[in-house]
Image (cartoon, rainbow over all chains, first blue to last red; front, side):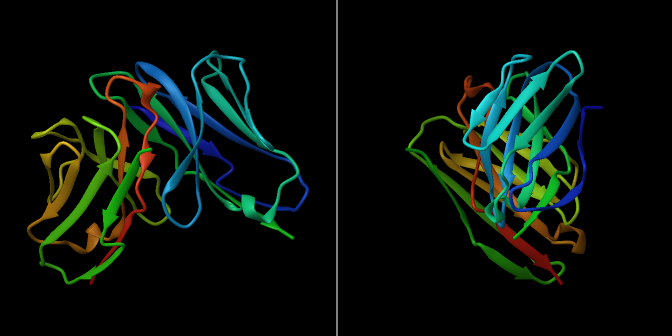
Length: 112
Length: 114
């Protein structure tokens, strides 16, 4: 059975801290790995990763995939209160229609 | 640019009542469409997906059904709601045959069954 496991499940930090969120996956016919940020409503897309070792970066957020270890990390530097959210990781299976297998998410709280 | 709409935003329904949630996508043709449910403390669970009009695949057996009467319209229905149907329902779309699986989500419907 396909599964994605995220850790930690929750994290509380202070503004300015750097955080690393972890995602491990066991997904048949793996195609890509996605990161989303979910605040109060819909998840918003952050990164799509397909190749090992290539970092994707957007401002203070960055992510990298390790296909050998079947894992990915999401780094956030100089955290701000606006980074408080649930961060979701999803593995994409290749098929007639790509399907996403989501982890349960990491709830990040950034305190001022 | 593409936009995805869902309505209603919130819904409170009694057990045993019917359900109809609607999702529409603008700005793209022949998208893949998806219905997810997110229960409290759990991840997103894929319920249905569709690769074209009238083509529905079910991922989880349950008392819900889905239909795609038009290219960019996706409907989630139930004849009789159960308490366990409560949750946050999200519709998503992706480009058919491309985007390496990236899906974009609508604003969601929060359903409470009492």
